[in-house]
Image 1 (tube, rainbow, N blue to C red):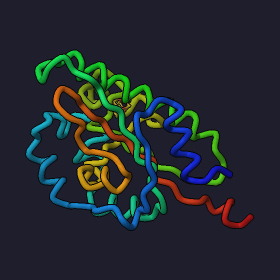
Image 2: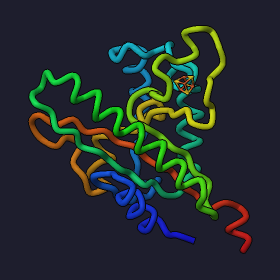
Image 3: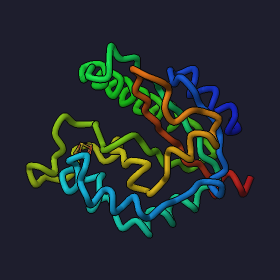
Length: 189
Ligand code: SF4
C-alpha cells in the first residue's frame, strides 16, 4: 500500500508543479468562506451542482472533511503574458482540470484508502453545468467540489504543504487536494 509521501510523489509525476502532505487536523476550516460564496463574487453561486448552496451545508461538509486523516495538496502554476492574459488563465485552468481528472483516475486504482477529491473553484467538468438546464449532474463520479465550498482556507493550507499561495507577477496558481483515510478493509488487515 502506498504511503502519503509516495502518493504526493505520484501526483508530481502526473504533472503537478508542487505537492505536499498535511495532516487534516492541522487544516483551518473557516465558515466565513460560505458567506463569501453567498456574495457570489465568482458568479457561480447557485449555478453549479457542486457549488453552494447545492453542494451541501457547510457544517456537514466540514464534518465530512474532518473524518479524513491526511491531505495531499498539489498546485499548478500557469505563466501569463501579463495580468490581463485571460487566455493564459483559461489554459492553466484547463491544465488543472485535466490533471485533477488524471489524478482521480490513477488514484481510484489505489487500494487501502477512501478518498475525497477537491478542486480549485467550481466544478469545471462540463462547459455548462447541467443545473442551468434543470437536469441532474451528468458525471457525478467526476464532479468536483471546491476547497472553498468545504470552507478550507487555501492561503493557510499552502504553507502547511510547503508551497506558496501565490507565485509572483504574471502567474496564476491553482490548488487541488486529495483527502485520504485508510479504508475499513485496510485497517482490518
Ligand atoms: S459534472 Fe458537469 S453537471 Fe455535474 S456538477 Fe460538474 S459541471 Fe455540473
